[in-house]
Length: 553
Image 1 (tube, one colour):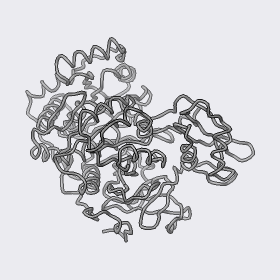
Image 2 (image 1 turned 180 degrees about the vertical axis):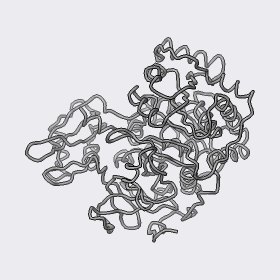
Image 3 (image 1 turned 90 degrees about the horizontal axis):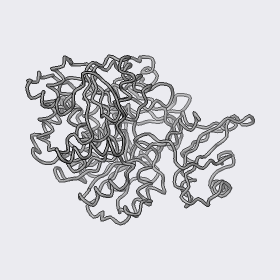
Image 4 (image 1 turned 90 degrees about the vertical axis):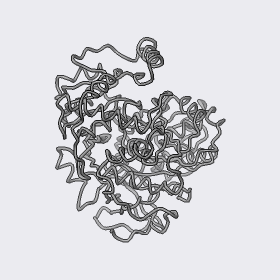
């Protein structure tokens, strides 16, 4: 199917070389198949309330029928803007049943970011948590949005509990600023109204675009990656094939602390776990570490996804260290580089290795992952998933050899169709079926890959390439350091110099001490010129540290 793939010999037993990306017509068929297969088994739980696979199928059909009754037609775009709530899986599958294209939107976006995304995609409808409706009010007249569905945090938690949660959120925590938007409808009312209508079926094909998943926008404005049914189904099957030898269908409980509007959690937790018939426990706010501890205490969690900063925080959270991990068996990290210190501390605490993966929004998102059986290489991003080829390309355009650094190229059925309405940007990153990632990496013996750094984050010190990941990994091993981020800052003599931002675990650690620590493991031009101590580092809602925000300061 592809060129020679040296990594196949290191696949664990039971993991296939290829998957059939067109074994389902789309994500809707995946849901309907599993609703039939797992019926009343719990699909998602949030804040103590649970929805079964059968009820998810039923309620999503009601929402789809409501959307059609409002005049929305196949191909129209709908924005979903909320944290992890039961409303999300109902809404996304309902939107897809109606033939709509989903625009997942970060609820923490500013009005400026919302307006760009809604205008770029031509969004005509939105489901938004009331906590963020005040921002929608500011930009609504400048968009094409005609249908506004509002939801409350506790709306699907039952009458008494829901009312109490909503009261606390609005009146005690004051998390719902005042807003005035005409002709809105509540989510539960939309479901009730949807019962009155018959859903007009929409025929999905593998090539149907179902998502505009916006990139983080590391340079300039963010772009909408057009993801098809085939892209998502392929990635679901790729993830499933890597995990299948270690999981039992219909018998797993998966913790989902990452927001499902993010491509990682959407594909892995919302879709791939659904394909296993897993019971997914949704965490509304992962920064509240006690909610994660409570989930482990209440449920025999067997699988968890996360990012480096979350695992690091949990490693240093004492209640986490007192838990029983006897049912825990699979843990996957993505979104940012997994630091060696974090990897080893997590394994010591839980007894389970974190399988670090790599991918982008443009790859739906998983492209590589370390074997789930723990046989991977510490510090690598693992092996390409089935039906995927990865290569390293040097600056002169030639293929790099083993251990040679270059830009990472990816080819496979999970690679996006392109950026919506941006053919020039698409042409820059899609060439002859290859996705040019903008990441610098290398291939090691056995077909394992390693990330060196983001090409755009690379620091140039007197003509020498310096990669922030390398420096961050060294400083992070200091026992008095909690978190670190490294950027390049302008310098008259060398063009740029290295600056590190540090969150201290021990307030007594000094700048001199950290620089001395870095000096032991780094050549002179890589050593930070200055250290700035911070109480916290800027992060995305997923927990990925924003070097860009530090640069913009």
